[in-house]
Length: 124
Length: 196
Image 1: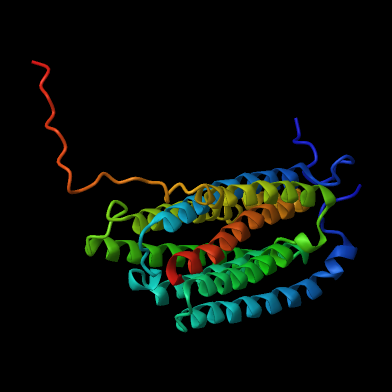
Image 2 (image 1 turned 90 degrees about the vertical axis):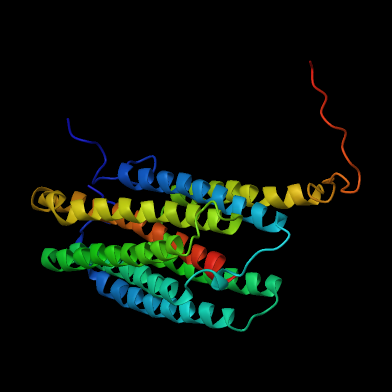
């Protein structure tokens, strides 16, 4: 009988190595958290600040996903599910950008303030 | 009738049903939070001005909470590793620590929220606070959900260890996948809301 991450002697022998990796990743995540906060105190221009913050967050997220969630050694089907999810996720995040490029806000018209609107007429 | 493929893997997927199930659920969660992140981008880019998060929110508290949640992810994975080493007592300690760290996160969040309410800052105050309370509120519900499942495996659910340790280990791994996902979401929420 095969098992999925089951308690087999072969797998159990690797656990000590895994634990050392978990500790290393933990330290890396702590350092990157400090880096994230430290960068925010530099008061960089917004586009650069967003790029750097998201880059550091992506590195942290990748570490969590790869090592804590074992994605670095997962089955193909899981990768397939995640690729599909990533495609839809990107499409979802791209929607505001597409809307923006259509000039949704640019063509928004405001009524002129110096023109008085006609009083509403009563139906009676 | 026994639940199939809890321990042995299916030939077609190469996975247990629980593993593929939790990943499909997490995929749906990515879309849920993705929709809210897209809303955040839409609202922020459409606003004439947008406040820096650190002018309204408490960065030191949120940094502390980030450290708490990352630590809880480590204790969670160590709980699973303890079961892989057949050390049930150690599992209980790590899982208990994970639940406690979850409580710490919620307590800090309670103080953050009550401080905002005390200052008259509500979701209805402005768009920044609306998206802040929506995103962090939904995330907080996920923390509570994860804690409930972890508490079950720490307490009554742990009986399975005596009858079917492999199944129990797999269940704890799946619970851990959800917990790590909650941590991962916070890793993106923290800079997005508090620092930018």
